[in-house]
Image (cartoon, rainbow over all chains, first blue to last red; front, top):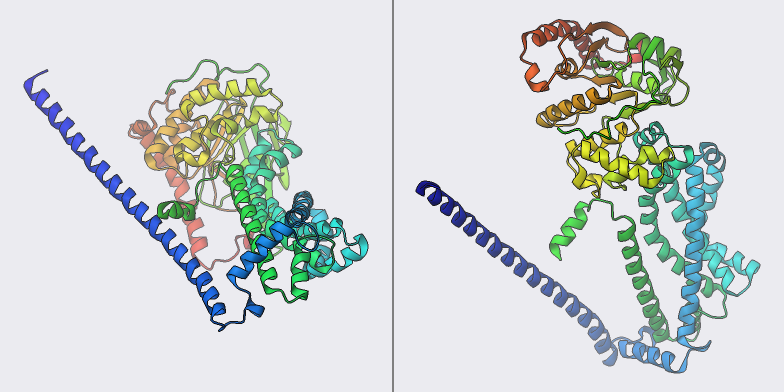
Length: 301
Length: 288
């Protein structure tokens, strides 16, 4: 190597070294800023919670707000502890929670399964969709919660009437999404699969279903919430056990703390279900490019 | 580009891949209920192993021709024959490369390439072995596990090409396959396509609106009229094969001569199509 070449090589090495150092510093700075921002966000959230709960407690303590009607945070916690230790009027708190979960989950599964099957079938067979379309619209136009009453007449006060109500609520959400998802399939993809030699069944399995899955999964978020609503409203209307019944009883005895306490339990339930669903969604849709909203989200947190 | 030895082998059971359209007319029903003629009395023949390019103004029914040959749609009148047989359903030995790469976004690159063999009942292990061979051929061996959205446009096009060619088609239909690519990528892909074609020699109908691309690639260029489309003229391209780099052949005197000749014919059609869309915006089917 000539001296010139050596010199040139050295200078490029040092130049690239300097560039790498700069990039490192920039990255560290960006990381630091991001951490700080996250910390601030959490602090803000904690403060908001403290303000609301603390304010509520203080207002009831100084009797500006009547604790009999509005309950109080300490009263709610006491009620929860009491339920956990001594059980509710209908057995242990855990049993009530489990009953509601079971009803919601069974209803959810039944509703999703039937919704997907009918949605895909009607999406794939145009004739079927044309024949059944108007009836489905009519049933969908009904406020379906009122069906709860008829289910209780038919199926009694046990779990089955709640499961069916939850399933019906879930069914329509999933059904319309599955149907739309099937209709929305890229015709190009279907044509390509046909030319590659796919049978009708293979097209449904490899092209239509995965394509509709995006729509179906989007509907699962909403339907999970609906299944919990279905179970609780069903219990409200008439039941022997469950969180809905606990709320109804608290309402009838003017026990505001009891209503809020049950609400808190249901809220935690719904949030955990939501988190599980998000996890499932991420796994099923891992092939998708991250959407711009998700990228923005990743940049903030 | 290196072509792997195993993947490009010609198969014994390939049907002879001639294509013949005779008096083909295709009408569509527009949403308003009127009839629109897309193709009128099209006569066209592609000999087995011939590379035929179809050029014409936008909306002249070039793509419709392909859907008729592929059996995705049926002609309103006339006959389409592939390998001597009238087309009913999808003919055997057809490959199709769409303008928008029709890759399944939820499958990996390898999963997309092996679709053809999988649909035809080839065992997974064998299909994947062949798929990997083909990914090697198109230079994407390292991307087998990627999803389509992680690839560039040119790479996705190569996956589409591999997915079409893995079935070893005797007839390859291409609908403006490189239309969405940038100029450099397009040139590279044209060269790769020619190299692949010269290995297996399927009959090709290559629809494009790029005349240079058509002349550079094809044995024969068919010029279509503005809609309703019909064959205006057919030019045999006597440039020697193998052609080599498409972007260099463009400067040869013979190429320029042919280009000039065909452009004369094409120009008036392009003008007519433009005048029609620019003026009045009347439904095209009105005069059919």
